[in-house]
Image 1: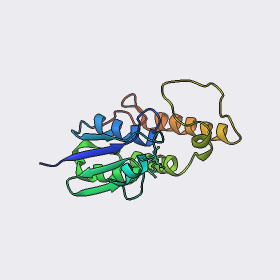
Image 2 (image 1 turned 180 degrees about the horizontal axis):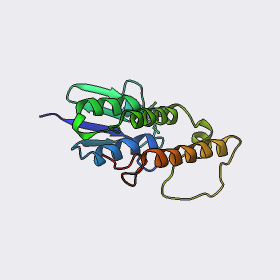
Image 3 (image 1 turned 90 degrees about the horizontal axis):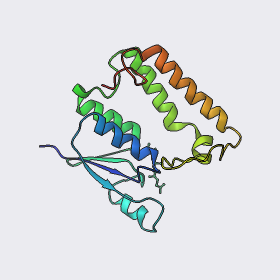
Image 4 (image 1 turned 60 degrees about the vertical axis):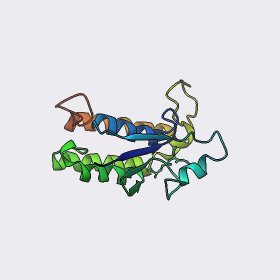
Length: 162
Ligand SMILES: N[C@@H](CCC(=O)N[C@@H](CS)C(=O)NCC(=O)O)C(=O)O
């Protein structure tokens, strides 16, 4: 019997955390959740370090294995549970999905810095610093292209979720 635990921050403020919680829920995986409240107390960093060598969340604990950094967690889940289809089945769609995921993982710094996530509220126009609109335009473009090229089979960017 394998034990999966996802260590995350606050789902409202940490998009890194929310993404993996959503993915694992959507895949129907049974997992424990350890939630660490980020930034609002002094010892959150040492709590994260109990689980994460990088000092960042998300972290996946699978039996004795520790897996950190979003894209690697995604690849690990895909390898460990191949029947769940973490990535699109079609090779061309899969390459596109991996490309935009990597682009998201390493990019959009202007947007990240100036418009941090907070799902509970709206601040229209706040944080529209130089470069932010270009990031937003690129994301819109990614979504449109994904839907147009690969979205026929369902309502997600690549059609059906899995
Ligand atoms: N490259 C990492 C980045 C993760 C990341 O930046 N996580 C933030 C969550 S908002 C974090 O752990 N911040 C805590 C800190 O920097 O002290 C990944 O892809 O998982």
